[in-house]
Image 1 (spheres, rainbow, N blue to C red):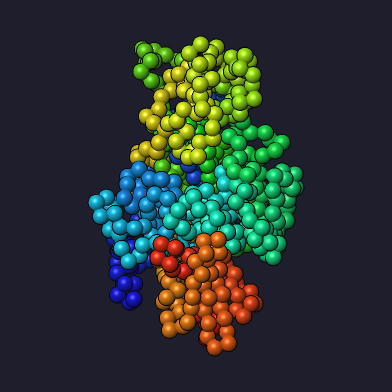
Image 2: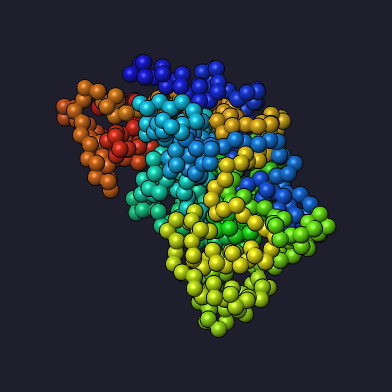
Length: 550
């Protein structure tokens, strides 16, 4: 095991491009008390230009809130692909290790033909401590996530949970709860189990479900979860402000709560649905979702400047769809004004998804007039036929909405055809993404950074004295190493995997994906979540848990 440990250290340093065991960023960074990481999911850099012009056309605003803080680009990739899925893309930011499609904060499998960096086959499926978790373990900082999608969707999950399949909400959701985050705002209450609700009660965590008044009136010191929808919060332009808050409002509320902590905090804020609008090739959805995100950036920057001890890091996890304006139908483009590019899209009052919700309850004879009301488009007979022939089913994979014959994609196709916007595809794209940052003393990352260097920068902002690797080696150790020489059994029931260890008259029971264990039926705090991987029938848990049964 010692040989394997040393090999992993060397391998980790190769992947991180560093020569020091401290795994530092490439230039000195002075630590701060609070760190806010902001992710506009799936935002290509072209979206900044489009959103900026859209704002100027509609309200005269020349700049985005993040514009003064733009400082570079980020090369983001998976372990075996230059075009990443959100789960491994975010995992690279949070753990410092690029992973494969679907992986959430775990070490990837080897892909001999395509691996971009060296991969250690003996480390497959190893859960990796995230920068959010390390902020808690080492610095005792408060933590939180604010999103506009499910709280255990790929990006937030990569902050505080671990598994090889981003779709396994039944395993990711409990980890988010048992990781004792101080603030969780967003959607996805359908993933909250009765066990999680009971744990909230036991830990004095306030839990609000579809209760905007409770959210807005909350001013306590307790941990707080507020989830406003069973899955995603509505797109901002479709959103009912009397039922669901904006991302900016949730961000401000999270900062008000976390500001009560003398120990400081780590907060991740995601504009989750820019990516979903891009998958749907929906121009007004992308633009308005990004502007909603930029308003949240404004809240974060305002807080950071007033607080004086807070850094803000803003960057997408990857690009999406190649969205841009000035398509091939825009003749004499250098002689055309803002009206030609932004008049049509500025009349759209709903996203394609929001308009679908309306049209699915509209009589066929009224579709043309309703479409006109929300888009100012006079539908042709061909366009009406396209809508009427669309398959109005719910697409199981939201990433394929723009590539299937559902009504959302039909509406988006019509809306786009009346503009001069264009898309490469409805898929992720591999371009470098933008980087923006604020540091109270000016220690910002500049130029081209890799996703791994972003992780190093975040670790240095927190002033971590131990690397994430060192934390991983303490927190996520194989049960066979922790309990070597002990009698143990694994119940691999997928609904409730459990490790049982016996010594004399003592019995230690450790459920998977939780932070509570049981010694002779008495509960105790494990100190971190446990992770069970069925692929290798292995529990990963803190090395010191063996002390409970000695």
